[in-house]
Amino acid sequence: MPTPPESTKASLSYRVHARARERWPALTSVDVRFHGSFAYITGQLPDGTTQPLCRLRYGGYANQWGFAIYLASKDKYEDSFLPDGNSAGTAEEALDCACGLYLNDPTAWTTD
Image 1 (cartoon, rainbow, N blue to C red):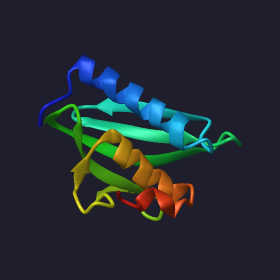
Image 2: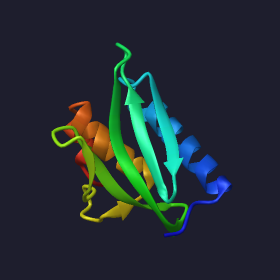
Image 3: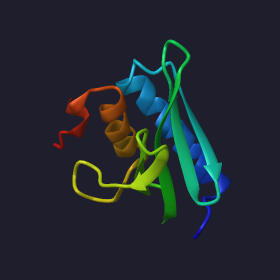
Image 4: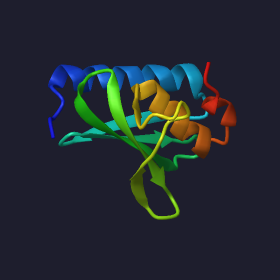
């Protein structure tokens, strides 16, 4: 699997942080960390609790990432589908899907 270049990592981090500030005020911060071809996104709640949200898989394109949701019940990530039915999409779509679940906001799953 390809690993994202540093420019793509920086772009992804910027986009995730911008979307979190714009759409998810219940998160005090988000953390994006990289390991190989994967980016792991974790949110921090106001009480200091951290919540793993999702894992993104780099497939060679900066604007298209494979999506895996974090399953708290199994303490692992599982490949999943975004609300539009695709298994890959933008970082913003992935963040919205995961936050819709963990922050209890199903409006995140509506597609235009």
